[in-house]
Length: 180
Image (cartoon, rainbow, N blue to C red; front, side, top):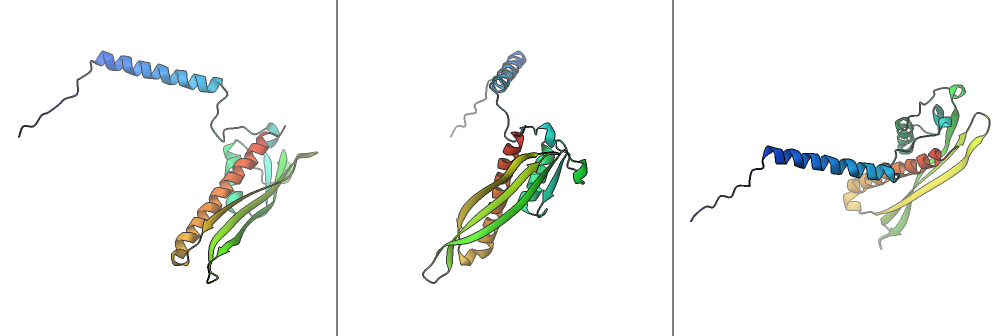
């Protein structure tokens, strides 16, 4: 039995340099084309000047929404104020609620499907006027439930809740970036 060895052809160093240069030009061209059409990465919108130094009033600072909202405000360049008097605007979160509802049960009256609903209400008050009337946003997701894998299903519910909080924050941030 004979073994056949095949080697890839070696490229000359000049050919590699030309290939790298061509790839760099192509990448630069693609980047220029994307920026020319107004393309921006998701979440890269800047906040208006009135929200440069906001005071964030949270119903509960330890919820998934509250922590993610605070993080996204800071990531967008806002400097959160500890005292309302020093702020350029006040963002007030008046409702931050997660509810679980049974959607279906088995013949033995054991839940087999739940629905999680995450609801948030927030408003923005400027120094002399209301900048954004109270906004209520809500997301719902359902998931199956099996009693014999209880820990896994509780973990699934936690992951769904955290994802809904991130999605709600993204919606809230888009509304804040549209303020004038």
